[in-house]
Image 1 (cartoon, rainbow, N blue to C red):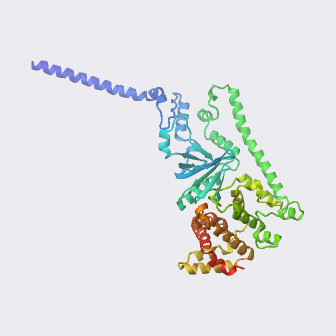
Image 2: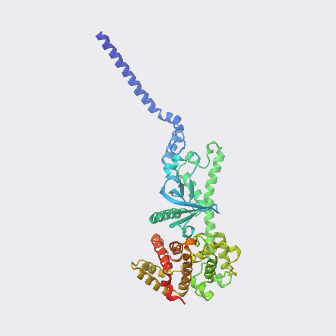
Length: 475
């Protein structure tokens, strides 16, 4: 019996050894056939974003090309430069104006575009429906600028694309919005101004990086099924696009030479081909032309608002129709007789919008550049009475057109504040609207957020202490 037991144990051990050897051989075989299994099963694996990974070819050259494609990500995904939450409003689509609706968006800035998500990008991609893409902005050829007049909110800037889409972005935190503004502006400045040219350059760059047929499929998903002559035609078109770019550069060069040889504005004005403008001219120039110290247009607008706009909700804060405002601007610049009681100017917000535009387009603001820092230093004074006296002294030193226009404008705005219970425009609200419009530093950019606080405070103080500041100047 003992021998039988030992014999059985030996047999079991031998079987286990054989099974173990077989298992090792199976693992070796499986390891050797790794690519075979992968080529059959990997096509069924889904990534996080729902894209199907293409099966790997058994052919050595195709395999190396596939690996190259996996190692080198698409150019559009090479750099995510910045991401975070901002307030966003789309106000135009293809040039068509949209109603402004603010919403919180997760903004992702890459080297060429901005994408908008409702939540962080990882959450958005996880929850995104198949085939749905986030809203994006192509930055090539886009324009970015601060847009204080587009919203009563602070720290608002606008991005306008070549396709006519317009977006407003905003944050209450000054350093955050400044950081975003500079990041997007730098991204735009790095891109070529011609969107079509840049897209062709991007395509050519992709082809030059690899001769892989996988990359060529980016241009035509069915290229592998096309005939050889069709492939040659595709390559011809791609190379031909490079010559098109050089032709466009030559045309641009000729246009640039033509523009540099065009007559100056002064020459055209002397010949009477262009009339002197009201909008966009220096304040003292307009006043000298009209033999006055306050522009006639400013007086007309103030008179119209005091006649029929003091009780209007949101006066000076609500924007009027921009096309109508531009029409009014054109009539004023053409020196046509202006009657603001005409039915076409019935919307008082058009009148207030045109008045704000007049001050905004002054080459030098109502508070001259040379006085800006002095007004800022005055508003910083700890003693309230000293603050008032310093500002009063500065106002008296202003050139007559600036001083007299300022006196009439702020006197008018005190009447708006007196009706605040009806028009809901407080001293603070008017300070926010008019501060950045009337005061700005020459060539300012870096300290914009800091200056904005002082601009509003100066305007508020001149409204609340109007009688003390302008009292001795009254006739």
